[in-house]
Amino acid sequence: LCCFLSCKLTKPYIKFPICLCFINSKEGSGKGTFGSFLEKLFCCGENSYISFNSLDSFANGFNAIQAREMWICLEEISARRGGLKAFNGLLKDKIASNKLLCEVKGKERVQVPWYASIIIFSNEFNVLSVTKNDRRLVCFKSDSSKANQKDYFVAIHRELSDLGVMRAAYDYFLGYDTSEFNYREIPQSDMKDSLVNLCAPNAVKFHKWFMCQYGGRVSYDVSESDIYASYRTYVENYGMQTTSNRHTVIAQLELHCEIKRTEEGIHFTDVERRSHI
Image (cartoon, rainbow, N blue to C red; front, side):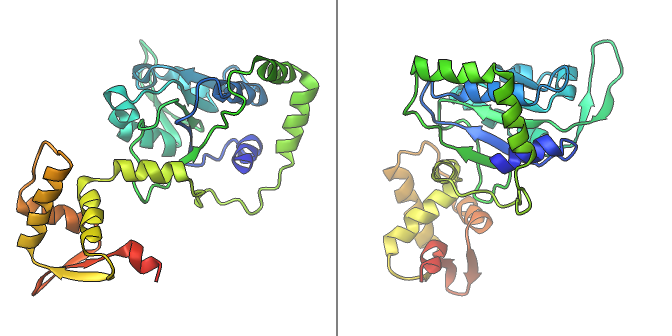
């Protein structure tokens, strides 16, 4: 996080396709205070930090206000109605794109350079769609030990209003060593791993369940009819409302899991078990 902030401060013209996610945290744990810190640290222009508490406002076509920002914060994201999952394509584009198609009312649209980074704040968990090989989202866990402690946050905001303290913070990040920073090396996060498992396609979830039924071996050869029979059992056990046909199940397994067709049926490989051997 410190490396990312330092690079953002010293080289604002370079946009890293990374989104900072502070999710599944207790109310009053300081997410908004961290946003205030960024706003004051980067207060070098008319608007360096802007927050949206409505996804519709964030996705609005009239987006001229976003063109000048260094940070765009999405606050109070809720899991209701799918959260950011409904805006998955837009979010990926906003995270990675270094150009913005800027539209002002009454004027022609123009493409402008864009260097804003996205931050997501939410007290809920299932607000994002995350894949196993995701390379954009960095998830953080907020420390709730000081949540809603008035004296603690009053002291922090007093320091945020102190020019000397913020000058020291500015100098700290300005001189922070980022020589070994590689934004492509996303830090491992238990929270992100849990979210990946939650968002996994049904085929992946079935594959993990299917592997547990055998147990012990690294690979298996199973006929398609046996696979589909196991899938029907899985659907019944977990109360899934829709049941895919046999061809769809096999196609989804081929797409998401490490399997291949053989003369004896389908050859499965338990990747997780193999990695531990």
